[in-house]
Image (tube, rainbow, N blue to C red):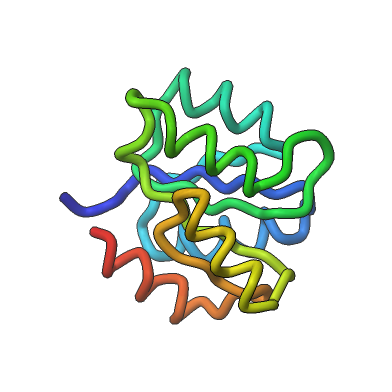
Length: 121
């Protein structure tokens, strides 16, 4: 099944706008959340088909939220791609261990993001 509904979780309005712009122009339906708590509320209200997750946010960080999603039987089938400025290999490995399907370094290249989404779909 092709992915259509994507939730972007990022505390940066600029980053949310940038990612939303790429995705909407490519035919995706996008919702956004500014932090992990808001993301979990939105996921439970209207389950997305993919989540793009920032790591460094106020409150619960992206690793914690990804782990919560991966451990929830109702949500664990929703893939998470972490999009972070944390560019160390240890960060990528840790993100994958929390349940992320992929890990992209910011600034995210549009072509790379679209390829990763296509690979999941």
